[in-house]
Amino acid sequence: MIDPVELQVLTGALRAICEEMGALLVRSAHSANIKERRDASTALFDPSGEMVMQAEHIPVHLGAMPAAVAAVLHEDHAPGRAWILNDPYAGGTHLPDITVILPVFAAAKHEELIAFAASRAHHADVGGPTPGSMPADSRTLADEGVVISPRVLDERAIAELSEQMRQPAQRRADLRAQLAAGRAGARRLLELYDRVGAATLREAFAAVLDYAERRTRACIRELGDGTRRATDVLETQAGDLEITLEATIEGEEIVLDFAGSAPQHDGNLNCPLAVTRSACYFAIRVLTDPDIPPSAGAYRPVEVRAPVGSILNARPPAAVAAGNVETSSRVADVVMRAFGRALGQGTMNNLTLGSDEIAYYETTGGGQGACPDADGPSGVHVAMSNTLNTPVEALELEFPLRVTRYELRRGSGGAGRYRGGDGVVRELEALAPLHYSLITERRRHAPAGADGGSPGRPGRNLLDGEELPAKTVGELAPGQRLRIETPGGGGHGAPDR
Image (cartoon, rainbow, N blue to C red; front, side, top):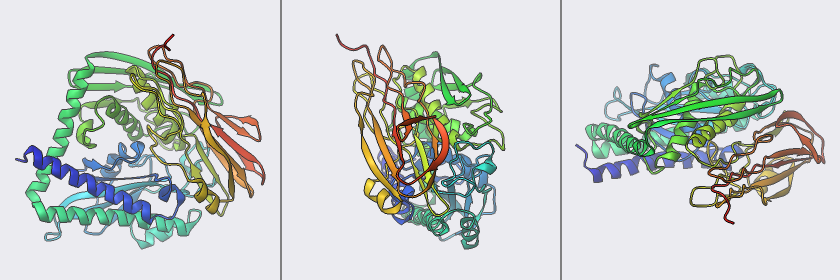
C-alpha cells in the first residue's frame, strides 16, 4: 500500500509529466493560438480510460477529454500508434479542438498497455466555409469544418487532413507538436515505470483517483444537504434560451439536473453532453477545493443529467461551435449561481478574422465575479477559457491588423462590499480585407451579483462605432475598426454605506 508521502511524490511526478507535455506542445506549435494564447491541454489516463492527472490548462478541454479517450479505448492499440479525432459526437467538443491520443506500452513488454497520453488543441482553422472555422451562423456540423472521426494519426493522415484546411503547413506543424507532446509524456511515464515498477505505478493511479474522490466527497458534505435551483439564459437574435438547474446534495454526492432547459437550438449553441459535464466539473472544482488533484476521481461523486435533444445534450448533426465556448460558460455560471456566487463575464468573446490565406482566433478576457471576501479580478481569462491573450506585438507581426486600443473598461465591474472585476476594451483595425465572425454573450443580460451586490456591465461589440449583435458575421474593409468591450463581473454583498 502506498503511504501518504509516497502518494504525494507520485502525484507530483504525474502532474509534472502533464505540465511538460503542455510546455512542449506550446513551444513546438506554429500557430499563435497555441504558442501565444496557449489554447491547449494535456492529460494522462490509465489503461481503462480514467483521467489520472491533467495540467491546469483549459477547463472546457480537460473535463471533456475522457470522452475522447473512451472513443478510442477499444481500438487496436500498438506502440507508437496514435489516434486523432474532433467529432463532437464521438469524443470531441467542437471542430477546432483536435485531440491526439497516444497509447503508452511498457518498454520491456510491449503487449502491456500502461496508460494513454492525450492532448487537445484549438487549431486556428479546420476548414469549412468560414476562415477560423468558428462561424456565428452555422446550423450543422457541415457548416463548421472538417469532421474527424476517430482514426489513426500518421504522416499520411496529417497530410490528408491538413490539405482540407487553411494554412496547411501550420496545421501540419501543430499536429506534429501534439504528437511530440504525447511522445514526451510516454517517455516520462516509462521512466517513472522503470523507477517504481509496474505494480506501484498501477497502485499510484488508483490511489490518486481514490484520494481525489475522498477529498471531493468531504467538500461536498460541507456544502450541506438540500436542493438549490437557478436559471440563466443564452442570447440569440430570436430571443433568449433558458438553462435551468436543480442541484441536489445528499451526503457526499451531488446531482446536477438540467431538466427543463431549452431544446436543441437550430443555430450553434448546442453542447454534446461531454461539454456540459466539463462545465459542471469545473464549477464543482471551484466550489470545493481547487487543490484537489485534478483527476476523474474528483468527478465520481458528481452526476450530471441533461435531457437528450436539449441544448445541453444535443443530437447530431447539430452545430456546436458556440456550445463549447459560450454555452459551457453559462452552464458553469448557473451552477455557481445556485450556490450563491457572483458571476464573472460568462463569455469568451470569441472573434475570428481571416481570408483564404490567414486565420486569426481570439478570446478576450473580462471582469470576474467578486468573492465573499475579495474583489473580483479584472481583464482576465478564467472559467471555461483560462487562455492568455495574443500579445499585441505577435498579433501585428503575423496578421494584417493593428491594435488601436487595449485597456481596462473602468467601472464595468458591479458595485458591492466587494466589487466585480472590470472588463477590457480591445479595438482592432483591419489592414486588408477580412471576414469576421463574432460569437459573444452577456450583451443583453448582465453578469449577476450575489448577496446584494450589483451586476456587472454588459458587453458591447462595435464596428466603426455602430453597435453589432452578440453573434454576427461580416466583412471588414481596410481601415475599418472592430471594437469589443467585454462585460464586468458581478459584485458581492451590499455596498457599505
